Amino acid sequence: MRNTTTFAMICAMGAFAGSSMAATSLSVSHDSSPLAFDGQISSTDLAHGLIAHEKVTGDGVYTALEYTNGIGVPVDDKGWHPANPAAGNASHPFGLSTFTNGFGPQDVLDGLLNDFPGDGLPTKRLVYDLGGTFDIGQINILGGNANQPDGRAMITAIIRVSTDGGTTWTDLDGNGGSVVYDGKAYTDSSLVPQDASPFNIPNGSYFQSDPTGTVNDGIGNTWQSTFMQITDDASLVLAAGVTHVSIDFYSVHHTDNIIEDPFFGVNPFTGIDDNTADAGVADFNSDAIVDLLDFNILALNYGTLVGATKATGDTDNDGDVDNDDYITLAGMFGNTGGLRMSNPDEPWPIVSPEIWEIDIIEAPSANIVVPEPATLASLFGLAGRAILRRRA
Image 1 (cartoon, rainbow, N blue to C red):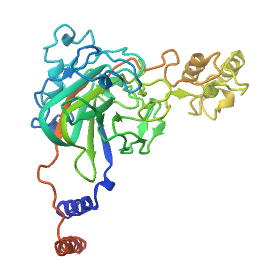
Image 2: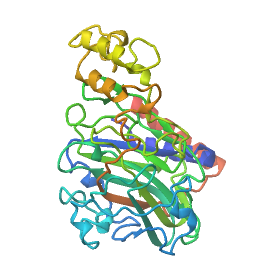
Image 3: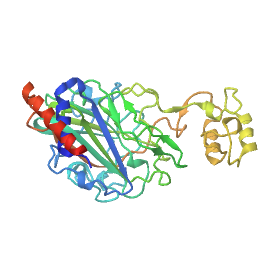
Image 4: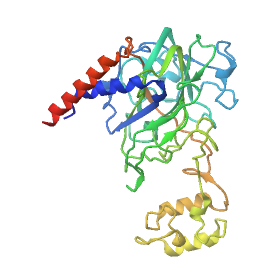
C-alpha cells in the first residue's frame, strides 16, 4: 500500500521547482457502465448550475476570433440531435443544463449532441461566464452512451480561456503546450492490440480521449462512459485569472465507431495529419493503384485463416483474408493516394459525442509557500524517515 502522506509531501516538494515543470496532462478512464463515474462528478465546481452561452455567428456578443474554428472558418452552433427533446425546447433538462447539473446520464438522450457539423467545425460551442476571476485547477468532462457502447462514448474537445471578460481568448495551456495521455491497451474489434503506448498531442487546447483509430463497437471495447480529467501535474494551476471558459465539442466518428480527429488533412491544433490511411494497404501487387488485379488476389486467397500477408490480400495485418479486407479494398478501389482511415467516402467524422457533465474546478486557494532552506531540509528528513520506517 502506498504511504499517502509521504507521497503527497514529496509531490508538493516537486512543485517548488517552478513553472518550467508544468505540463498539461489528460487522464482518460473508460467503463462499460454509464454510471461508473457518477461518484467523481463535482457539485461544488465553478461551473455548477451555470447555463452556457452558445456562440452563434453574428450574435454580436463575442469577438471575431471566437467565430472561427482556428483556421478562419465561421462557426455556428449546431443545436441538438433531432432525437434529443432539447432540439425543440432549449430549456429542456437534456439541453444546456445537463452539462453542469452535477449528474451523470439521466436518460439515453441526455446530452446528445447533433451530427454532421462539417469538416473541422464543432457540433456545439459553449461559453461559461464564471462570474468572477479564478485560478482553474482541473477540468473534467464526462460523456458516454447510456444506450449502447459505440463511438459516441469517445470525446474530442477544444478548450480556451479568457482573462478579460470574454474579449480575447487563449489556449487552455497558454498558446501551446503538450498534452500527455496515459497509456492504455486499446483494442480493435478483433482484439488485436492497436495502441498500448501513451500518445502526445502537442497543443494545450486540443483534447482527444483516444488515439485516432481506436474502436469502441461493443465487441472489442465495450465502453459506455468516458471520464476525462485535465490537470497540471506540477503547478496545480491550469490557467490563472480566468473569467470565461470556452469549450468546443466535435464529432468523433462515422457510423463505424472508430474515433478520428475532426479535421480532414492536417489538424491545425496538433500539426498532425492522422486521418488518412495509405492506399497501399490494398495495393497487393504494389503497382501504385488499387484495381481489379488486387481484387483478384484477394478473391483467390479469400478465407485464408493463418499466415496471410499483404501480398495475399491481408489489408489489416491480422493474418487472415476475410470480409474486413474486402471492405478495405472496396473503399480504396481505384485510388492511388491517402484516404480516410475508417470511411473513405466521408472526409471528416459525422457522429457527435454524448456529453453528460463538465466540471471546472478551482485551484487550491492557498498557494504553497516555498519553505526556508532549513525547513526544506527538515521536510526531506521527515520524508526520508517515513520511507525508512516503511521499509523496516
